[in-house]
Length: 229
Length: 217
Image 1 (tube, each protein chain N blue to C red):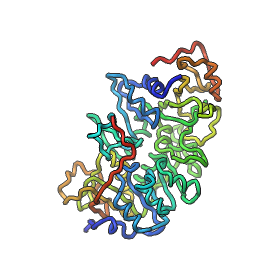
Image 2 (cartoon, chains in turn blue, yellow):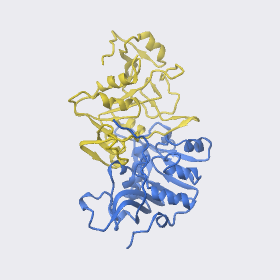
Image 3 (cartoon, chains in turn red, purple):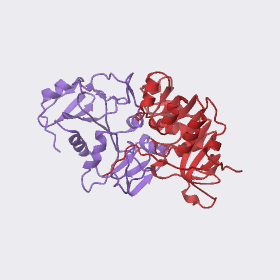
Image 4 (cartoon, rainbow over the protein chains, first blue to last red):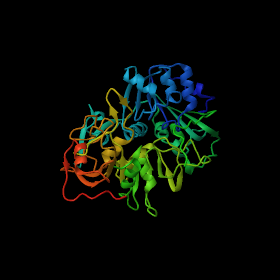
């Protein structure tokens, strides 16, 4: 079984108008830059994107928003993107905002064979509207369903040609859960190696979850808040 | 009146040795600058870092190493990285000893609003809803009034709620208040601030009992 694809263009083959995608990353940290670029070039529209944030105006998922390729965003925080806010307030873009831990757990559940779970986050708020409430040991919880993405696209630091992945520092964030959740999971990595070159003790995502892998190029790794002491 | 740094310094007095602490964006972030010397406090950043260090030097900057405010940070000996599901497992299961958050509004029942202004601003709740739903110990750092001089400490929230009955203590530019079943209980006053000032700036139910000492930093 050969999981290695040549580049991002080849990796995103099969992604079609109207599909639901998961995109890893927190802010601009750990986002699949190459695949996002390929999606922008593809011109595919009406996408539902599940990602913690929506990028910034001219980078990350912000590029997909500029091209009006996104029908709906499912995120926890979108504060860094003026175009996003404009499209949202004008009604061009649908958005579902979720507590960050709920977003993470809905990804994890999708990859773990768990259709739904109860969480206290969002009880008594707008997030709970239309959701079943249940009480456990005197505390109220709301039901949340696992996501059902068509594709999950993640970015790892190192990967082997079998699809094993290692993430770096806080660029890990949502990537491991999303890698587990895709019907088809695409991984782009900074360094692609042969099986056996990654220490099995230190692999974060086991190969079984990954369907396509490629070595990315020209990572910009833009920093949103460059702070020094 | 307290300036932001002084609000952060007052909150830092609530830290205890061995605490795991999550600091929100804004004034809460400043609390890290006032951890008492010799005290062992571990900062949790919900994007996947336990044991957050100071901002990096120019040479140390790593785009893959940021905090939940997307600022570049560093690690410390004993630091650990993890994914977002693990991060919120720590939060929901009550392992974080103290959470410090900013707020747009708090009411006298301890409800908090800090994620949305309908029709105007939609930033999202980030990790705030998970934190307020599970943390046992939440302190809010905020200005007592908005720019128009209206109270942000209310009887009823006017903005969409983030969490119910979760805020235990509020530190503002004017005072320190505990939230109990009786309402906002005034505990300490900022230098130069009177009970009448606090009363005038507090729309919610204010309880004043006994002598109110001045805030000591």
